[in-house]
Length: 233
Image 1 (tube, rainbow, N blue to C red):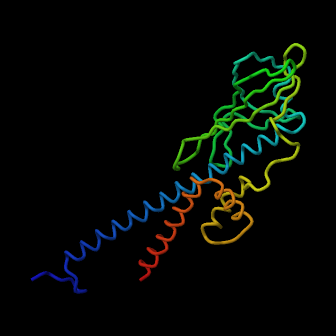
Image 2: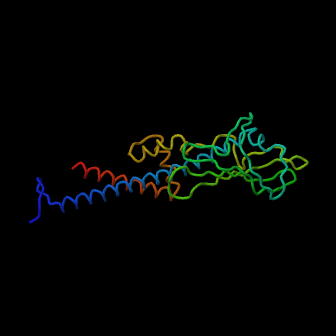
Image 3: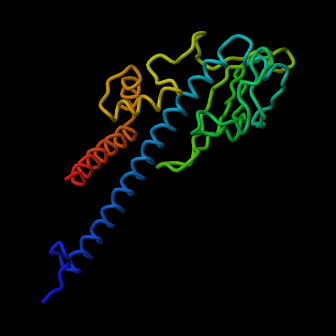
């Protein structure tokens, strides 16, 4: 005869129940970890895109690009590394090692692909390498490249420059601002409709990989809710 406890359960049943609870707990923890990594991947990708738009808008403003490259003489194929990017007033705009919105680190600023297209003009890439902070799915970081349109003087030195094809206005319309991305994601996943969640939703719709990640997060959220209901019972 099996030995029963005061509640009428055998020791084997209690051990099996404890084991199942342990497995369920591990499953919930794994789901939460996957959800966190997926959310971080979406957040960092959106913030890298937001940084690119911000940098492009700044470098298109009068005096910004010129402040950083005026008087520099570059040869075909020359590349060089910068410690920072300055505003037109000389103050620092971006600096190597800078933390951006708690999810990205600006690890390097450099130029590449200098190409003279006329006697008094040239093109050049301005590259920003952004590394993720914390665990997330996907690549460890991003490289964002601004195409610069350079004006040269008679000696071939850079006299002025701007981002290639840039307009004078800021280019943030239709994209989630970096400081609102986290709130937008929270609202989107909780089903709350807000200006931030609509912007994030619009951004995700344009990126198939991020859209799929967001779909997986929703599935995991639904599973979490079902598990919570089971434990309540």
